Structure formats: C-alpha cells, structure tokens
Image 1: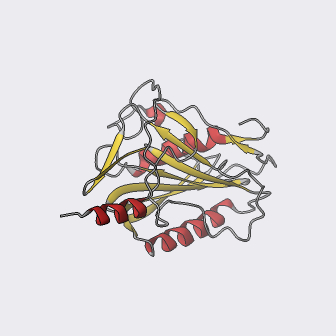
Image 2 (image 1 turned 120 degrees about the vertical axis):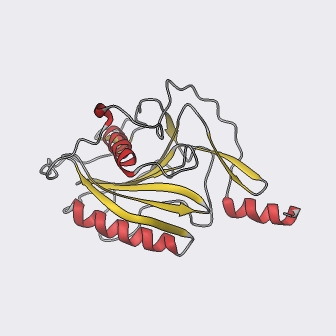
Image 3 (image 1 turned 180 degrees about the horizontal axis):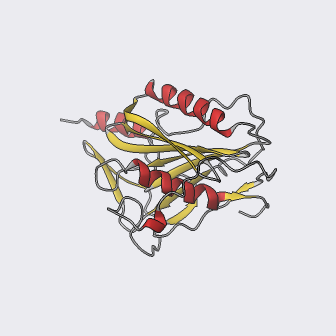
Length: 233
C-alpha cells in the first residue's frame, strides 16, 4: 500500500510536471509497427567531409506524424534520469539561451507511464542538442560522449539492455542503445557531426522498447531538421 508520504516522495523523484497539452497531429508517429522504406535510415559508408558549416540555433523540426515544440513536453523523470550530453568538456561550445537545447515531440496516440498510483503523459521523444565551434572527429567524440553518459546514467538507475548499435550517414554518425529507466523501457540515440552532438530519448509507445533501427531513422530526421545555420528558430 502506497501512503500519501510515499506518493509525495515518488512524485518528487519522478519530477512530473502535470500539464494537459493540447496539440494537433497529422498521423500516428514513432513507435508504429513496420514502416515504408522511405522512412529508413539513409546509411552511408562514411560521414561526408566537413563543409565548415556551423550552427547558431536549434529549430523545431517538422516530423511526419509528430507535433514538436521547445521544452521537455511537460514531463521529466528527475533524479538525474533525464538523458543529456556529457563527456564533451574538450569541445568549445556555442552559447545558447537556457532551455533552447530541448525539443520534445508527441505522436497521435499519447503515451501514458504508470508507476504505483502515479500516472503521467510523456512525449514520444525528448531531445537535447549541444552546438560547438568544431567537432574535429565526430565518430570519436560520439563514442566518448556515449560511453561517458551511459556509464554516468547507470549510477542513477538507467540500466542498458543488449548491445549498442552504431550507424553512419553522410550527415551524421549515430549510436543507439535500449535501456530501462525507472522501470520503463527506453531507447536512446546519440548523434554527432562537425558542429553538434545530441541525444534523442524515445519513450515506449506500447510498453516496449522502440526498435533501434526505427529510433536511429527518427533521430536522423530530427537532427537534420533541427540544425540551423541562421538565427531563426
């Protein structure tokens, strides 16, 4: 039996911001079974050469079947379970306004997470993106950030499931792994190019992990759509 005090502790730990968010959606989003080949990750043998383009802002991208906006979508785990980008201390960052690195996206069917007497609506995905003056070796930096962050998160209760999987496109390098956070099956993808490193955290739309290949394809769409070389967001 969960006491009122227990519920309060759980709520504080979970860090839920209770909010009803009304959004319009075009179609079912991430987490659906199957998918067209046009939605697959556009793999490449290697990352294209650095063009010198750098980014000044994170846009809110237009993702099929999703409604996206700046912020955490009214939900966060709390207790340091929210995924971030760590291990990038050697990279000079481009200054961003507070909160501008966060974007969240909801699909047509809302995801409800339940734990004991607590219930909360979560986005289909939440993202964090860090901009840099230069990432000389995106693949090496991605490996460093992935290893450092995932190891750090284990100390707060995020437990990896299976092995990570690495992908390469002409635009990005990506590394994804399924994990369990506060009993919930999550899939997490980190990505990098010459001017940015980010992470996309996928919540379970049907109580199961989002498949890694699907998460990687969605991460690629987000990153390509979110990076802006202008000041417009």
